[in-house]
Amino acid sequence: MSAQSYGLIATFETPAAIYHAAEQVRDAGYKHWDCISPFPIHGLDKAMGLKRSIVPRFSLAGGITGFCTGMSLIWWTGAYDYKLIVGGKPFFSPMFAFPVSYELTILFTAFATIGGMLFLNGLPKHYHPVLKYEHIKRGMDDTFFLVIESRDPRFNLANTKGLLEKAGGRDIKELEA
Image (tube, rainbow, N blue to C red; front, side):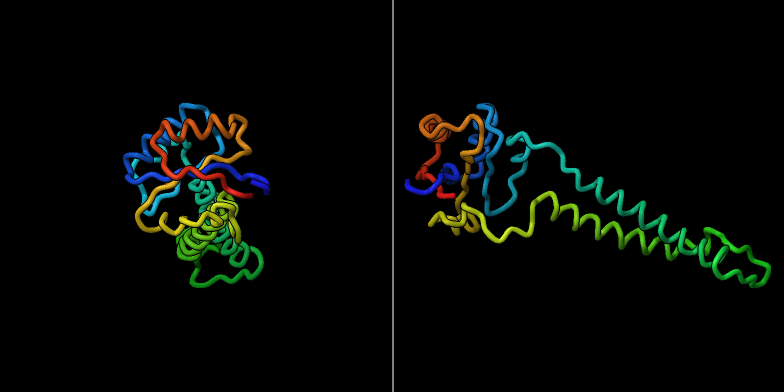
């Protein structure tokens, strides 16, 4: 191949086949690889050795920020900026600030969740070398793919191809970067 190599792609026919192949690739010590599936496969993330996502932490930070923003906004306007005694009520009470804080908690949580997900996934990404593969559209219909990137420290073209063959991969091709 004349162009720089992105890695190897192998085709698998069933969810069980790609699941077991993922376990073999994980056990072989590869770090930069991925599975492409037309639908979610229960347990595939565990078979790949993936850790739990940190998106919930982004969501929690957004929710706490939204709640504190709502409470601070009501405190600032009621107790400091625009002091107005109405019916002997206090300048600030969490009871009155709750609706605003509740709505801002939901809003900031949603923004933080979406923003964190986009950030961690590296999106928007308008190009990926896997899209050059001529049969990649089948990955949205009925076929499963496993891609091992050439930037992986354990990547060796012959050894990696042998591993994919041993794992049951068919139509193993080298991808251009």
